[in-house]
Length: 222
Image 1: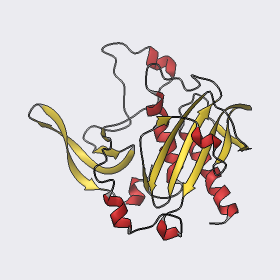
Image 2: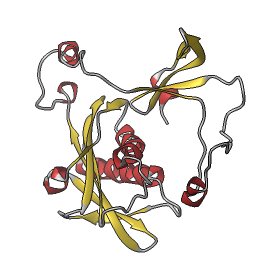
Image 3: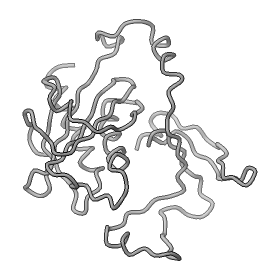
Image 4: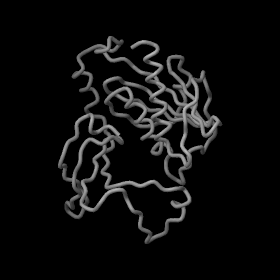
């Protein structure tokens, strides 16, 4: 991978993150940045065709409005979208930390709200053995090392976008309309990525999901 190609991929990843971050007006990507010191930052690692470390940092604490929700959960889909630019993979747990912004091998881009810098995005690819990188050993053997790692499996029956004002106005009895018709299959997500479709069932008075279709890598991209 040439330096030019690497920079282009990093810029594409930054753009995907900016589009996916929750924002009333939407974020855009500015120019490359040097080392920065975010007031609040979150990192995660993706294992896949090209393993990458990704991070998002904000100029001030509370830049992402969360109203009691964990900021890690809010930025996870955006970091996953950025990592998918490098190919199929699974993003791990999002953790607080700014180590990636201090790494000279990471590429850093500004995040803009209008013309103002509100944060930064950092990415650092880690080459696999098939790409001639430093990792050795049989790929299947390496994957066996993480067989016992637990991952979050989520079933989603629909979603919608709401302003913070509308969310704060919710009261018991309010009905939130989702973007899916009744009877449509539910999405089964692994760490925020769709891997299958299914139908919701009841098992011993608990909800469950019956898998009806497994998606391939292209269909699962989102």
